[in-house]
Length: 185
Image (tube, rainbow, N blue to C red; front, side, top):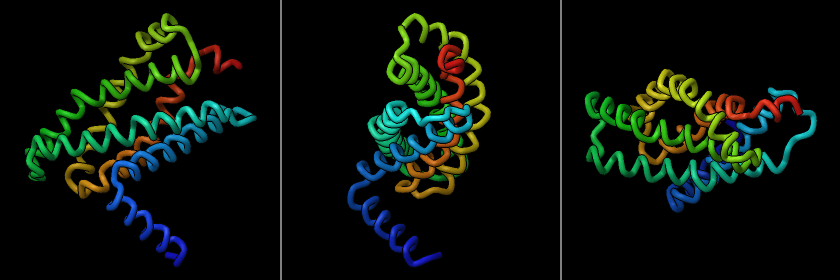
């Protein structure tokens, strides 16, 4: 590993320790931006939509990072920091029954209403048609991520790990949340 990378990682770790919420929020924002940039490239958009990119970064910064920070603190409070197999299974199930449906629903609403500026009626119809498929896909993918996160990640790295995986998931969600009108633009 180069000295530059080692130094950057060391400084990041210092910030994560000294300012965990801020660092996780910024990390989630940057990764959400990377996710959106990737989704834009995958869909063949010729000119990067900067407004959309910034709105997705805002979502990660204002919601994704802070939500994850407090979710993991709450989970450790509820389960007293235990990491045995039975407790990890309970954490994964609780997360999948509560925050997973909420996060996917909120993302689809945010994307339609804020990012694309569509009317509530159009967004509601899009959610009605696509949300069940999105949530079912989430329940196939996220329990594995949750298991790895709760079983192997120290609490200070859980949001960072989750944000990294979420940036990949975000590409899928981003492509699912797009309206037909925008796809044909």
